[in-house]
Image (tube, rainbow, N blue to C red):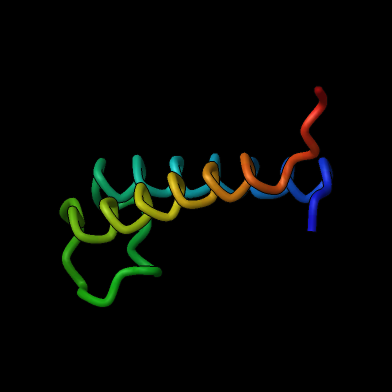
Length: 68
């Protein structure tokens, strides 16, 4: 499914994942989404969000309509 709208949505989703990764690295900002009660940084969550951001940007690149 090639659509510029879908590509933009995937790009925005990637930006959301980047923001979440930064917030997880800072620590204590997203305590409701973490499984533990500690308020420190959550490196595993940050890495997962970063990987999901890269995957979203790659998918957005494939979803956009090419102009030649």
